[in-house]
Length: 331
Image: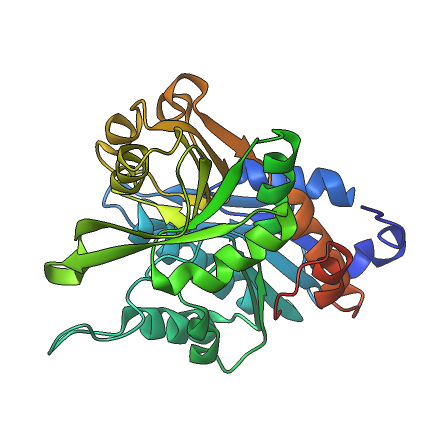
């Protein structure tokens, strides 16, 4: 991407990062050709978070990179406190760059007497000082409507699809793991020039934490190489889809997901013959111990975020990023 024009906006442009994914913040800064803002973040012995902005930001446009990944509550609280510090230091505008939006799966009441936590988080972010939000591949796109401030919803689809194109997968088929991902799977299929098939996923238990996968598959997978797509992997239950596909005569699967949440023993569940490779992004840090000896391939989301930040700061269209990649995606 071109960073032409950054030199003359540096005086009113600042890029900060929290502690959730500092390497991603550094990479974005490197692409944009700017140094990260000076900030000191510490945790007191009683677990309280303290923040000190160590440079003048009066009148500046601030971009703060902080995915609200595990530990979700700590990283969310840190983001809120950082924004409060920025606001009280007289920042002109604060944009929260939240590549992974925690609590996104709690976007509605699935049973009685439950919170809608995603809406609560939206209120907290706005109250803490956010003037704009940037995020990537929300679990539920309607979360954008929880905000009364501008929300730029980006997608890693082109980033992941370009990697899969490089693999030259023969006789591939894009798999939607459930009906809810069908439209997203169609976009993958269009970009990759592959057919699509659909599986059925039924959730049970509180919060849908238990997953049962029915073997019913709509579409031809016999002798094909499946590419299972989704927005995130948390517990690793998607292995059941891969197992079912192999049982139906498919080859070991590729899995393409944006957010590598990878909780608990998920990597053990995913390290199986029915899964050939998992491609993901660095919206969330993926330590070496979660990369399953190279089976998990991480593509950087930094170029996309840097391009979006630059376009927003220069008052240009963000949608054009995806139109240039031949992706029809509402931003």
